[in-house]
Image 1: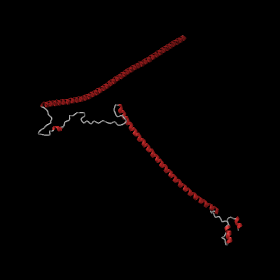
Image 2 (image 1 turned 60 degrees about the horizontal axis):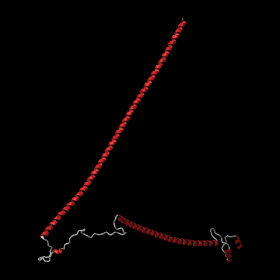
Image 3 (image 1 turned 90 degrees about the vertical axis):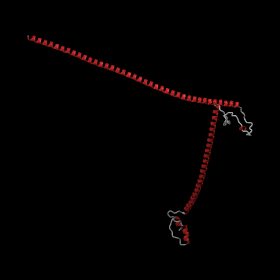
Image 4 (image 1 turned 60 degrees about the vertical axis):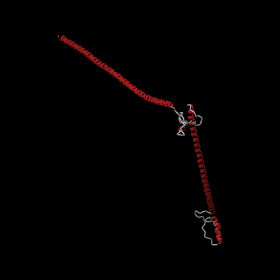
Length: 304
């Protein structure tokens, strides 16, 4: 049985009936079913499947690690780009602020330099201080009067009050009256000067209006002259046209004379032709007469 199975790899056998048959049965090669695997191949397949599973797990782990590393790299790169952009924006803003400040300072320096050129003060790199006028009277000196000295301490016994004589009163009133009349005269004079200024303004306006009117008159005269020149040029062109018409008439007369001369020459030639034709006919007639006379004489001579 053993020798047979060594030469026949696949054989259908019955189940063993005893231990010996069982021992022999176990030693017999197993029948290969369609699509089935032998033990060694199955082991290899299981090992391969196990290796494939481990490789798959390792690949998944590596993929997860790569994804995490990529995310970390992307996040780091994005944060770096954001930090770089923010730094660039901050630098640009600082540069813009510095440029605006420099421009303002340049404008201020330019204004102060212009003031220095025209003779104004204050060009020292800082703002000039404007002097304020604290005199409310504008330089006028007003007399100070202590009103408390005008009120007596004892109304029944006044003392220490200002005194003025009739002569001083009359002289003072006269002086003030004269000064008031002078102020009225000043006012009248300045009012007159103001009126003179107004008159001068009106005079200048009138002069300007007159000059404008004269200018318009000159323009009108220029237009009239242009109109006259245009009329003269028109007359010249009309005369040239008349001259051309007369020249045309002369040429037409010459043409008629040439036509008449041609007709007369034709008639003359025709008359000469007629005359020559008549001469020829006369000569022919004379020749015929001579011939007939000769024939008659010849006939008469023969008859005789």
